[in-house]
Length: 276
Image (cartoon, rainbow, N blue to C red; front, side):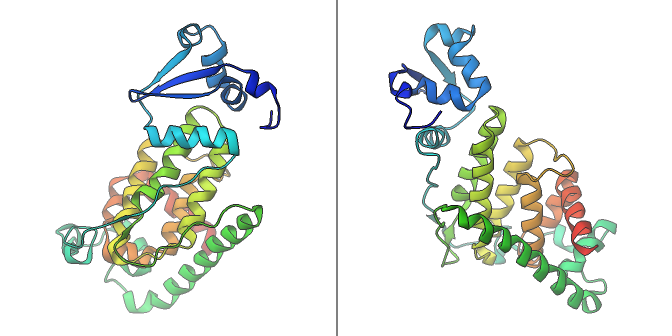
């Protein structure tokens, strides 16, 4: 069904109450894009009988972007915010944490090849740079390919205090929503938009926290990657490889990987594929 189909406008509006706010959308549009939502609107569930559904597990901004997508097949990301300068463990002022001074473990040795540890740092520096450059070129080349789809070019950050946390999370939250309700085109689009933004994002040391916050959210709200499937986790593992020098030097990525085996596992799979 497309937006030009007049039957859409003949369908009744359905009410979604998102965190207390009523939002209205043509029922046919929503039902057409998602099996679970179709059953909610047209099936035998209580929502279909009542004519409305309560959504407490999604924020209003994410649902509004979903509604925009149902009508236009695109959605806007929010504007970046301005961060206050100051200390914190994801900023240069807060780098000397107790964890950063721990003795390197076996997993640390692998991460150290990107400059995160002292062992053989001088010897591995050239190899690290080569792998890093190759990963970056691969990541950006995918962005160049998808840019040919007439997708709007995202804004690139130009200042260290431009906080892109909500920009990144807006795409990730929509991906999680699309995964939950089996909306495959939206799931693909949100992943592509996130990759587009990351591909042209300048990772200033002050902005490392934007990336670690994104990683924490994605790994807390998505399922384990299936081998051979390109999803948001594999894309982020690829991105982490392109920026590992900065992420280790100025952030908590090493601790995050060691605390979360899934993040480390995805990164090591990506690393193995790209050095073979």
